[in-house]
Image: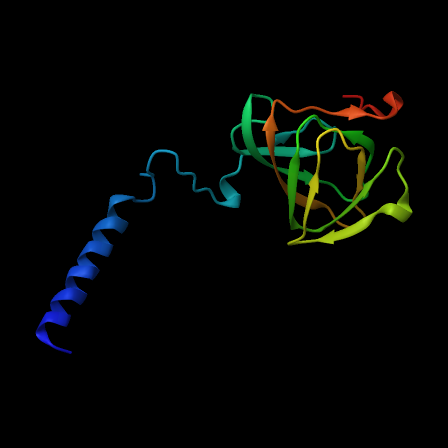
Length: 157
């Protein structure tokens, strides 16, 4: 390696360390989000038994949001819809999802960790967990809500 290449390598290393040092553990550039799973702040969700943590924005306010939900084992959510288009990524566990106006176990598809699905606005769907709970990341545009096909399935808080 020639002298000029050594200078370039050293200059590149110094520049890299300077850039890395410019954004330390608590010093993020404007608009950046960096959060570990342990830093999420969980609270009771909109449905009893489900916990929720805001990642970006809030589903109750106007604008884009990213949130995570923890759904316990042996949980069933009857047919309902949301007013916004949504995307879902299963972080852990297996989530069972189906589309339609009534809970139909034959329509459920098992979505293990790493799986993805979408829910177009106002499309009825239902979900279930079995032997284990699930953590799912949701993106959408708020404010969002729930509309159950059968009002009798509306959760009682």
